[in-house]
Length: 118
Image 1 (cartoon, rainbow, N blue to C red):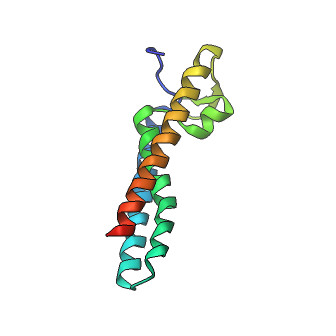
Image 2: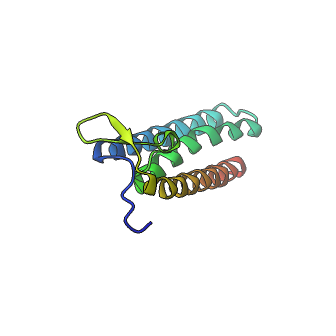
Image 3: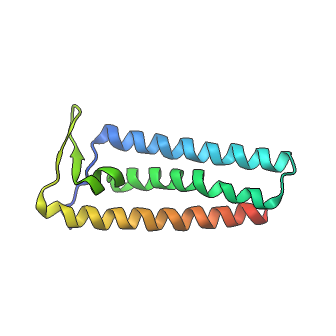
């Protein structure tokens, strides 16, 4: 697993990072709107969705691994397109996907809980 390089090229990493920022901005905008409109505190629980999307984007960029591509058993290619993962890469990709999803759920849940009680 030490020679694992991910299933994303540099452009794919940038796209996932931008997606992370978009999700984060969306969560902030929703939070501010809920606070300013004095919405019931329970409505803050909707923040979990944009926060999860944000976390997935940032973790995919960090791990250079796309969850959807990995689940489909493919990788990005420089210049566009995709190709199948090699057999020896599949286990490493699965481990990275699992880590990305677990970390994303934890981060989204913790930040949502904080936003709920602020």
